[in-house]
Length: 266
Image (tube, rainbow, N blue to C red; front, side, top):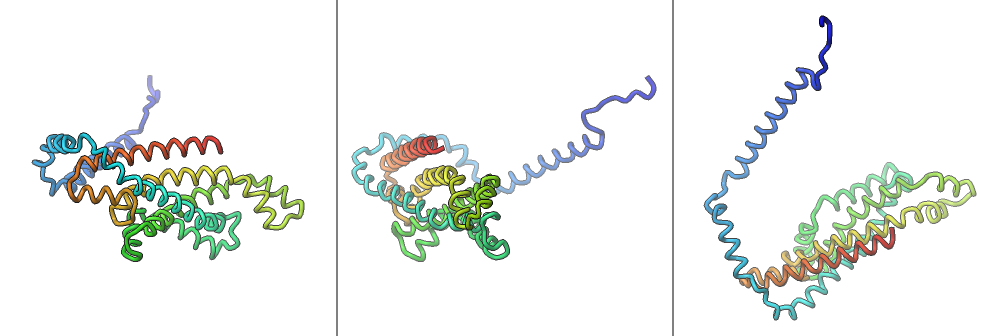
């Protein structure tokens, strides 16, 4: 019928643009793949299954008798995660209140400073923090605790200041209408609303820190990672397998504890 319009899912121009986009994506992927694999020795890649099987064969069974030497490093790892989390909380909470637009005393000076500290903390991995701190403080648990703390500041600070900004303004206005001071508004209007989020964030971060603290010993920051590094250096694969199993079990337990605590709180 003359003048009848046929519906199309996409116009010809849109369809052409989509095809050009996908051609560009495929070309970019091919270029990136060639760049990444330019120095790859494919002979080793093809032999990887045999090498992996040989390595697993050497690592099994785990050397269970080595467990007696892992209890102390495992306890150190848990302490690194716990103390680092607590220190990170002490630093992150004031920064969160300074970063939130509804609680900061200065949006032009203090809020940008707090946001910068939070972003800087989140931008640097805990392993890099550990490398820097070990070079400054020397190897040991203190470097690991500070590395975990500095990394935790950004995580806790960001989620907490977002929770502060999302507080119900009606409750705050009601308290303000009674003539309450700023300290009372903060204590009775904002803090009770963010406490559940604060507890959940803190426990969740502690769970993450258990995993991260387990590898800080690879750079000299103490914990069970130091035992892992020592076993790797002497190619003691049964010990390595046992350490990996211990780390796995520790992470599973911390995940279960974290989930139970967060469920009880929230």
